[in-house]
Length: 391
Image 1 (cartoon, helix red, strand yellow):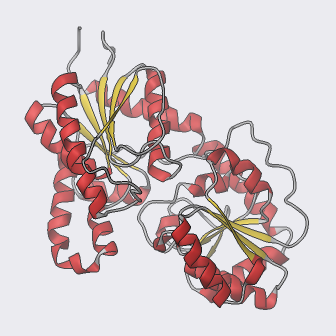
Image 2 (cartoon, rainbow, N blue to C red):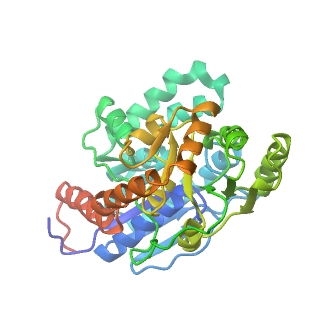
C-alpha cells in the first residue's frame, strides 16, 4: 500500500547495540534496509554499544541506575534488570512518537505486547530463538515452569501482526503456535560482495578455524577434544579459535594444555567482521561444533561464502540450512568430528567441491540483496495491514 507519510517504526533491541555479534549485526542490517526504504525508525536499545548513524534512524538508549556493564548473550539477571529500563524508554517513545508498528526483537516482544494493548499499536515478533526452550536449557531448575513459559511464548506469537523467525525450525514453531503471518528472514553472509576469496590458504599445516563467541552451547569443548584425537592420526594440523571473552579464552587455553595440544591451538581473541576475508584466507577449513539451539548460527552464512570447506555438527541447528552437498556433517561426538577433520585434511578434492557448492548457495539465497528484498516484502505486507496515513 502506498502511504502519504513514511512508516513510523519503534524498534525494540534488547541488547547492546552496536556490537559485533549475532543479533546486533542482524539488527544493523535490518536498520540499513529500513533506512533505504525511507521508514522513520526509533530504536530503543541498551546503554552499551557503538553508535550507528543512518538516515531516518534515531537511537535511544535505556539509562539504568546503577548502570551495568558486560551484558552477554542470553538470559541473565543483568539483562532482565536492564530490560526494565528499556520498557520505560519504549513506553515514552510509544506515547510521544506514535509509531505505526512496533518491531520487537527477542524478549522485547513482551514489552511490545503490553504497549500494543495500551496504545493500540500492532507489533511484529522478530524471533531469533525459542525463549521458552532457551530458559529451560540454560537453567534446568526452571523446568517445572516450562509450560508457563511456552504459554507466554505462544501468547506473544498469536498476538503479533507478523512473526519473523530467523530459521525454518522457528518458522515451524510459530505456525504450530497459530501465528497469523510468518515471514522467514534468514541471516546472510557478512562478506563484502566484492571479496575475492579465490587466493589459496597459507601453505603449511592444514589449519581449521572457528570464529564466534565461546559460550558453552557453541561446542568448543567438543572441538578441542575432537582436534586432539585427530592429531593422533594427523599430527600436522592446527586450530585457530577466534573470538571470546578474556575469561573464556583463559579457560579454554587451560583445557587445550590439558589435552596436550600445546602450540597447535591459538586464541587470537575477537576480531571485527571487516577482517573476515583475511581470516578465511588463512584457513584450510572452517568449523561449527555447535551443540544446542533452534537457530542456525549467523557465522554459517559467511562460512558458506568463504571459498573454504565447512565442517559442522549434524544437528538441526545446522541441517535446516546445510546439506552434504555444501558441508561435511559429523555426529556431535569426538570420534566422528575427529574423523571428519582427518578426511578434510587428507582428501584434496573434497574441500574445493564443498566450497564451490556452498558459495553458489549463498549467491542464490543468502546475499545482502536477498536479505533486503525479504525485508521489503515483509514491510509491504505490514503496510498492507495498516490504515492509510495522510499526514
